[in-house]
Image (tube, rainbow, N blue to C red):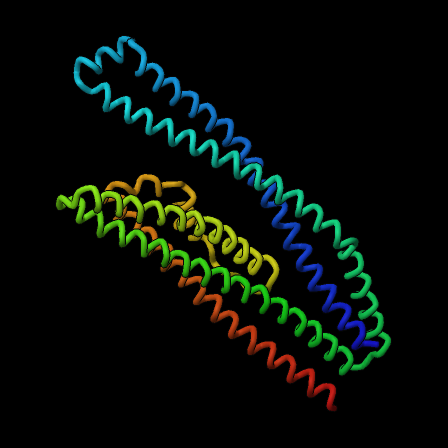
Length: 311
């Protein structure tokens, strides 16, 4: 009877953990959606302002005339057009993110509905096990029950930590790809400054575009890694310090990669990537140490279960 209950509790506990993770993720997505909707309005206003600035410069107004006389009209117009393109790209990216989140929320709601009353079922099984242990009585029955529960908890904790480690390693691999393309852009940029001409300029821009594409992938992986770390802190008995996470994650989320055309910005971006890499490596190393401790604890707990059953 006890074995059957333990198996049922372990299985439903895994489902409950998945349910809570999905529920937590949905809440985070809803918060992010609310922020994006607010940002969309601000970005639209910015786009309209930049568009008006370009139109004013293209017209024969006082400012346009003054800049033409001073020979700076084309320079200012080019700058305003660049700002307009940035504003347009930011607005479109925000709109796309909103649409993606709305789809993800709908999918999360559908998945949550499939769990049924998993929380109620879990509480009922725990109640049955509690009654059975009380009925059986004895020190051994109580000790066995405590260790079986502990073993179940440790196995789920180990699963959470392993998922976080996998997400961290995946992010590190992608960061290495960004660094590779930035190094290439830096090399071509140096050659360009020495008079490399059209070929080196095109090669530099090609490397920057690829770095940009790979960095967008890192954005998504950083979000996934942040979520896995939050799961470790929320759903296990261990605590991983992620207070410094935003300091390197926000760099990728700010969309600064579009400015990497300047050689100094390429160097700055390489420095940011190195900082991010170092921070993530430290977190992964800490997780691996935690994992080793959890696995050792689980091994000891199973040995104690075996000793109780043999006596």
